[in-house]
Image 1 (tube, one colour):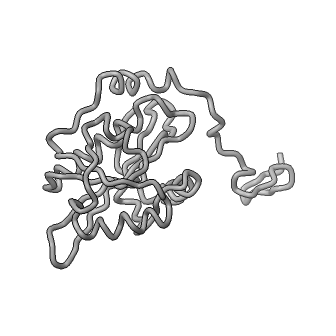
Image 2 (cartoon, rainbow, N blue to C red; image 1 turned 180 degrees about the horizontal axis):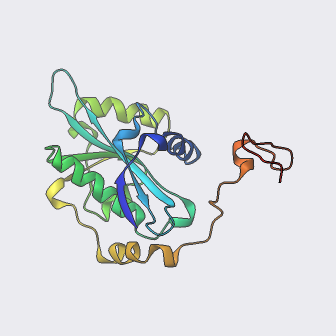
Length: 194
């Protein structure tokens, strides 16, 4: 299992899963995402994004958003490693503090994120929090972490190393029907009739 940058060709996959999980897809750009992938099967297990806000009259602000783990991969440390990679990227881009606006604050608290007062948020995120509450996440609260303070508890690291072994079996295999193709009657361009 590893976490890598999303590829442009994964845009549809990302959008499908963001929609099915009810996550925020505001200002979607696939290049802002990372994807967790099982190195043996190549199967995608989770994803997340950093969104950099560039207000005209203030310093840039980094937000973690749209973090999701596919059903069969949950409780395997996948989300923790997605968050870790995003925080690393934020640090690489020069951010000391990373924000998250989510109703899942207890999950992020395991890594050192702390709830903050709305008044402590940069102005651009105060507006964003209001929009999230009106849209994709009515229970969203503001959280932040200093990049240097981020930690993954050991059980998450161990679960991530063993993720394919402990995986809940789910039918993630794509079939022709997923693409609206009837395999009984479909013909293919290079079908030889054999």
